[in-house]
Image (cartoon, rainbow, N blue to C red; front, side, top):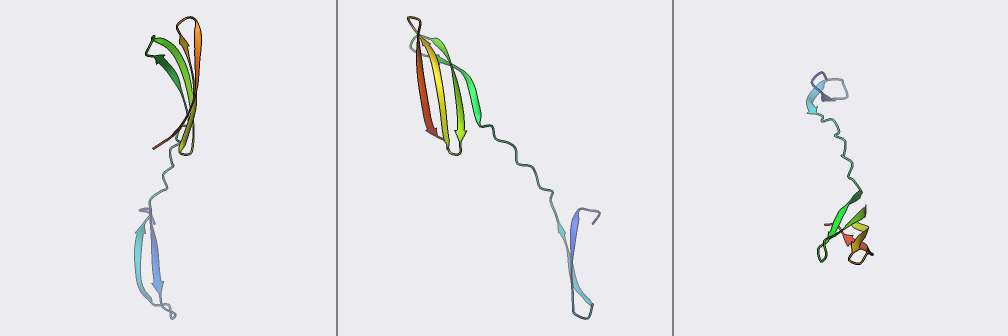
Length: 85
């Protein structure tokens, strides 16, 4: 129909129209894509040294890795696994 509705008509075996109804139809809205990756900077609060991290979502789980500088020109690496809720 011109107003974006669908018309349903019920008729009897002899062709007589016994009723009808107009049903509004909404256009399907696209589902927005949910980002699965995250990356950024981190800070070690004990000695205020910078680092970087990367995370990836797998369904209800989140896995990631992080590398931070530590005092004395060393590096600290971590692997993370979590549950999203």
